[in-house]
Image (cartoon, rainbow, N blue to C red; front, side, top):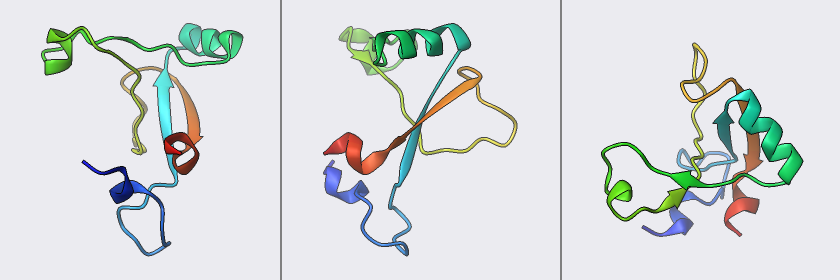
Length: 84
């Protein structure tokens, strides 16, 4: 997949991303602020990432109506800055 598909280009581009978020629990969020970075972790679900013991950090462009599944603190990031 090419990153250029997801670079913000025009306001009218439906695929353009302006912001992504990392959702975490309060204790993990406090560690992010103390460490000055988001730490990656191992995947424990049934995906291919688990087989290779790859550490990941999840980001999402989604806004959820009834709260977030992976925590109660949302940290927002500018997508274009993250990928450049």
